[in-house]
Image 1 (cartoon, rainbow, N blue to C red):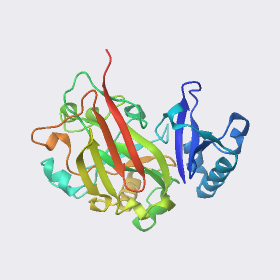
Image 2: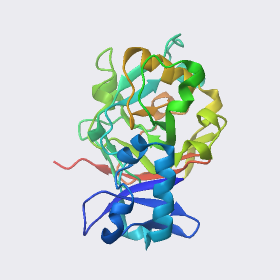
Image 3: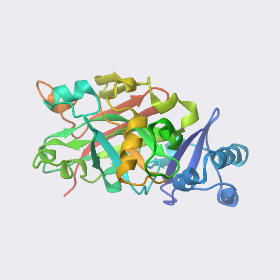
Image 4: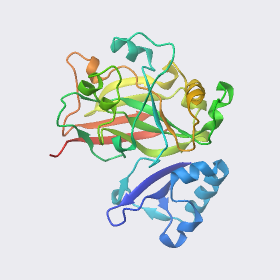
Length: 290
């Protein structure tokens, strides 16, 4: 099952669409009660409810023209967005860090993300706006002290992210919060792909980032130092996970900061992140308006 969260210029209210063999379909206002219109609500209802909603939308939904919609991040108001840094050994090496024995975890705010085909905003105060292609996982049911052996049972689905980083602010202090949370600096989407469509833990998937058509990152999710089950289990030691929580699983080597010469995103660029079996996320880059 593949769901998209969207709005339109005529109606800013978020709605759900289902990707079908014939294209996108969504429920009209007359049939909206047949299925939740919030992916967070749908995820929290469980996999059976998700299948029922998909069936209702496919049967009763109207065709939706992708040209008419505004893509939004799949889950609009997650309780937590948890990011894993230094989770590919080659990226750790290019970043001149020693590989940590425990995941490097940090949080991002919802205001730092936009959806597919929306502009990523290069801050006016920075010249080091970097790309980071990542696989995203969504928590499907809550829990704490989750064992690694059962951790993937808590994952509802997957998506794609460009976890844009403002490098000259990221390294102003020992912690990375500011550089990771500029408004509209990251993106997520376009689709939420249910876990049953992918290998367990999203393992073995090609992940690639392109800037203006040039491949700048290319790796495989099996190269993660801490696989998804490990991350879910370790995070749940500290905080109870909730339905809709988002985990960004880390980026591979090739980031602009580590290149010679360095390569950063600028206005007019187009950044694409593609994860095999999940989808392609595309964003243009725009300058911050005063």
